[in-house]
Length: 630
Image (tube, rainbow, N blue to C red; front, side):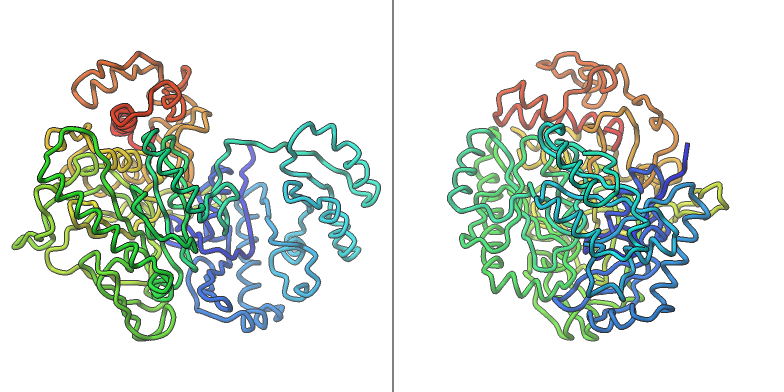
């Protein structure tokens, strides 16, 4: 078949991704690369703008951060025909055309923004240098499709109109024959054929480019939240809150959680009621302006709410130690990722002003770490894989933190579970003495460029490091690892840990490997785990959530048949856990009718603590055997 590559000359987004060569691109192009079944490359998005203030952004060129710049300076640069930005775009497009049969180029915003024509880098300017034929796509869900299409074409120059070979109407709800008159009107007015009307599809989960998807729940009303709380208590759903920071980055890290049956995920920003006690998990996400967003947390009252939530966790641990209850109970968790991890420490210093105004800001004080911002040239960009090592053994073996009590002992479900993802951060975070790390990580194999035949994976690095910090037995933790919830094994283990078992001290580890037995990832082992698809059975429910832009897997399990075809769920649970699931029934593997998805299982079972937790544990056992294939 044809080798296809995506391309977008310039993207503006704080949702980014790291290629195997350690270059940073927009996550949108990484998702498109996955759809094209190719490895994401920096040439697919040569210019990335990451907003850090209302009038400024970090400029990433060829996957490497260059500088922070305000909008006026950036526009002046674009007005130069031979600017470095335009040269980078031409170079990247030429490289893609040399190595791929088809390059699908994406525009940005409107292609008829008259006031920006002389600064265009991504629409018709890119189409002209690539000599590309253009298809105009209109989103009918947003309404005004006639004005979109006809108005746009009327504002284009004759040369630009000649490039347009067709029109597509996207996201049409209902009977498409009802839009036949609309198609006729558009074709008569524009003299350009309508190539098709694409129906609105449900159940397709694609990461958003730079804004929350329309279905995301942002600031649910207090009353609705109270109802949701009562509903969660009745249905035993897990409630998760993500604080929607002013400069939030990589919020796509948490969308895989929202797609799990039995989970309600809310983004909270300006809600008047700051009470977080109704939630089981609270997450502080990444940020493109960490110290600014930390001040915002305090000004908005979220810092006080987070302190109360931390006290809730401490209270739960005390009660668990006293009661030693054998009944199921919820276990609250507080999590920080990247910038959120930095905020949860004791201090964030930026003496040179690399990430905002120079100075130092006190952190929230939840984790025993301190962060110093480094220069753009020292920015960490790497794809990595490893294992969760959170347990009661501090980095310095001569002391054990007082906050790691017997009641806060580590959850065996998380210890030893494999993880993979990528790091993007300016900060250098230093743990204090006795800090308990969260993960042991190693760099994924790099990509060695080849001639037109493609590329191959290079040798893996022997270097490894500990990442993150945890307190209270892992009930409060932070990490730099973006995409940590993309991996089914860790995601399901984490959700199962929120619904604690009847007796934690007797719970098995569901077959997770011991960290001591896990070496640095290799091209055949850890390197493959860094990929998005471990199998391809054609079922969208199996393994497509969020493993974006990492290229097709190789080796066992990568064919069109699942590696676990015809396996028996009861047998698999016996293999993984050492005992049969007495209440389970025999069901075939996903290619033979499907291992029960979370949605299917939920429809078959009563939603109470025992069965919902067993449900997460069953899928965890499967993912333990097959890794992220499951």
